[in-house]
Image 1: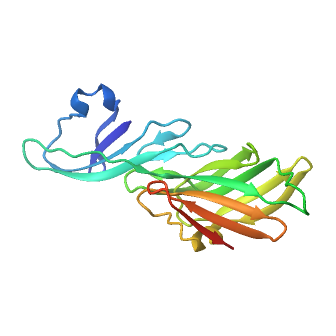
Image 2: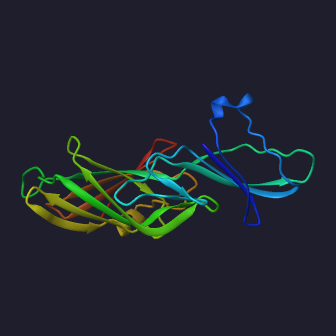
Image 3: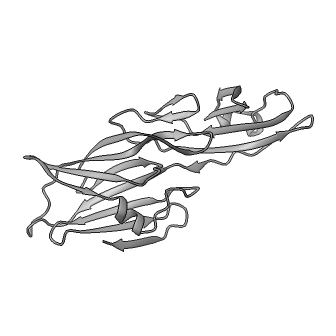
Length: 216
């Protein structure tokens, strides 16, 4: 876990810690009295830290990132707070119905979006280009999306002969009720029916386990 603390844009501490190795799971640091802002995030895999921002490298999907940002009023001799991390990514699974009466021959997809990371101070998206490829796994395509500001998602589909079709998911996902500003992001299941040109969006609740389905 990465833990950062700052006050009035001045960094107070930045530490990589392993909660299981801390005495009673408590991290301690000496700071001057006053209001302290801090953020914390789960260990990074392919992404990297740029100041207080987690950046997703071009061509990669989001890390399974959990993070938080909070304020502590350190006005006495001691002050404490409990770190509560929240889900900052959405696992998107895409499937395709039959095309002209036969199973889809799509072998890969490219997903593009408008966020290349997250600002840990505000837990808001860092604007930039997200682009990630996904190959079929048992007929499904999976991409881990970061938190998005405008919700715009574009999918390009490819067969062994090359580019096949492009479709946009922003409006269908929005109409389904998916909330990109939720404290913990849910997951998405997308099915595109070529025969009917119909997109089905299913919200898979990460915490409660219920599903919401919207057909566009």
